[in-house]
Image 1 (cartoon, helix red, strand yellow):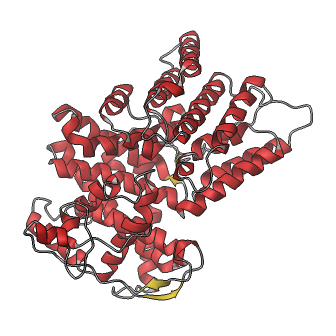
Image 2 (image 1 turned 180 degrees about the vertical axis):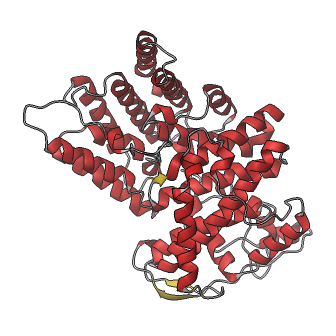
Length: 507
């Protein structure tokens, strides 16, 4: 059912479900509270060309018009950030990989910061973008409870963004990018979104620097983790590539201090939620190269134990499979660095493969009774087995019966999930892994069709999975008829000449 409009301001601040009664929320009245009223609906001009916003008009911004010089200056800042030698240097501490704060204003001046947040929240553009994030982006970040009030992207991020300016700018940047792409507003997604993103990165830089010298408050710690996740979602929606992989590394820096200071327990569910998602994104980037792995197996075990079913709802991969593949990627990293002999590495791989083959998906507990969760688990299980086979022998022919069996099992599992089921949005990685080794034209057509269905549902197009597969398929087509050497998709994710490789976020 369509939502009846945004919640009242009081219910939003208290993170509870609103009955959206007019002119005042009855839940507020029944509790003796003053209802803060409802935000004005934004008006549109210009016509959206696709998606669920098709036919809608582009929101009017009350900010000053941005001239060509403003845009050139912003592009120069971004270029300098990407070309900076300090960003590219491998030994640079994570916090130094971010651009320096724009001013010397003390972070301790909370009153001034609160005034700045209040000023931003009063802007009509802010309400437009927060509403878009709430109603168009949040529901697609988590399955089953996507449009409910207990969606953690609503429950955790929106209230925290109204208190932490860095997170507020990150959310506004992601929303501006998404809304600008949907409506065809080039200025919104190429200028407005970038301005907010740069402000968020500066705030993140300052918070990470502060965390090196002192312990951040709980809201500040969680805001850092949330900013990083939102920036990664921005990367996914824009290009699918996170430049130089600095964001997840920065998260690891804060995470270590959080664990040293107090550890993680059930009362820090917000932090556990963010860390679980970031740990999974760390594994995703390590699929392209195990040396990119940043989180330790201890942290993965910690978040797997402390996480609720929201881990699977957001990421799809069952936590047991997440731990197995995380452990083997860590072993692969150790072997790459010369810390593990080939024999030790091979034994660890074979043990992990056996664990995955013997893992009984039918005996596990899933977020709901929907039987299609079993298909999601199977797809991820065989995607991870397939990756282990490739770690053991990257050159092994794709015609290998064991490899083709994994491909078939992934495609069979995903075929049971229809395009109108929200679980389909979790399956990009398994579909991609099957696509990298599938040989039949009809299988390739099926995978691209499923990608298109996912893009249609989420209204986010991550170009990386499709682009990488097309490169693999083109390279295979160029091989001689009797040539069976594998074409690895990971060979297309390495950029010679840079110390820290980019993160390819196949999600």
